Image (cartoon, rainbow, N blue to C red):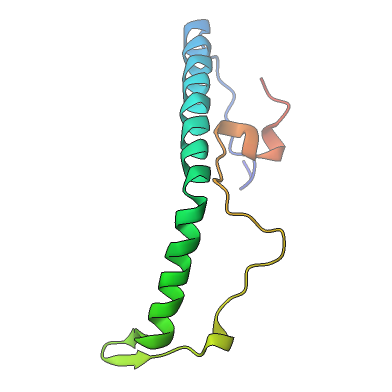
Amino acid sequence: MTFLNKYIEHDVPEEVKAWIKEEIAAQEVRFARIEREMEDLAGQRELWYQEFFDRITTMGFNMDGDDKIKLQPGQLPVKPEGCEDRVVWEHGVDSDPALKDRD
């Protein structure tokens, strides 16, 4: 067994396979709802980012214990052009290319 291939051959009963398919479908429905809610928060999220940047440039943040550091506006990260916040979600073996063709 290698680090990437941790699959152990075993028989999976049909009822278990059916249950897994139901669970995946339910997760996809939940994810769609979560993704939609996260997209609805996009405007509010931009405000949160700006409030955070204002706070760390005016009041600073604690680097270590009582050591407080204020960032200069030029030190703040800049969002790349065309970059959008997104919900990242992977389930099961779909995220492992070594296991894609296995049923």
